[in-house]
Image 1 (cartoon, one colour):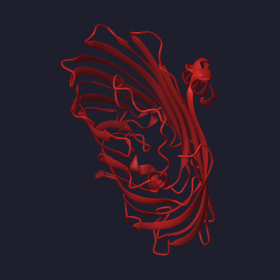
Image 2: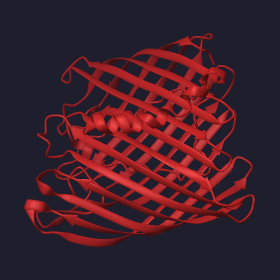
Image 3: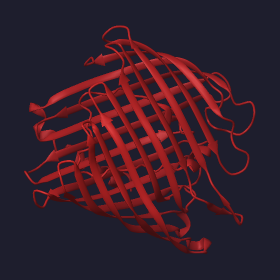
Length: 402
């Protein structure tokens, strides 16, 4: 299944390879090493949870663009060596995406990602902001990633393989139709497949441009998720959408509708269905030296516990270049799962993450900086202790300089 998913979705990333000879390109690798301390890096329960660590990482990026296409490949890998209790822990994130205008009226796009995480560590990592990074095309509906906080209470590494392909077609000077299909596979090491699931999803959107600054439309979304023991979840529902250019640089999107969900519990019995409110929105600004984006979502989603819970997420990301050599980044997010019925009572899980980073260039290739993070998980039973951490680092760039 994994190899089949990879072969189908990687095809989308090759759509613009033939034009790469005339493309503008950017390629580099950032090597980083640092020391830090964390009060509860794995979000485990107990009192004696803090540890000092050494961390090495590498982030590689290759992007190219032409008048008709843009493609990027990126990879982040790290190893954290904790000097007590936790030993070595690895995390990684791989991604590829592409967008290509195949004609005056049609655009195709696709992306694929594979990550390995533990305790929500990747939520507090910062990468560079490359000049040729692929930004979302305004005709492509935004994808809101709903985080499952129940994952972060597990002491095993969680892997996620996901991808999508789609096309956007101009029906008239004011109307467009966009279709997207995708899939994701989540698996957790050491759980004997009890928590793993496979999800297929899709959406069909119609948009009409009312003015240069305002576009309205409708969207139909659906997903189907398979779990172990014959369990499955199927959800489908419509949304009304709006996209607006508020001022030069500021863009807003919003969607509002409902989702019907049917949960099949297989051998466990007790099938159920529900109709729930669905909404998402974003407010973003992108300038040459500053980027800010805030998002909020309330969606019915599949969870690692095998329940179709209504989950709410909100987050914001900020980047600013203070001078030719100084820059700051920050991120904040909250993810809350809906009430799950456990032993006759409603249970909720919430994950909070706050992180900030300061970076100072020493020369064209060498920089130094510091990061600070705060993470908190509230879940079933006693909550894990708050994680407060930080580290200082040196970073060296190989390849194209900023």
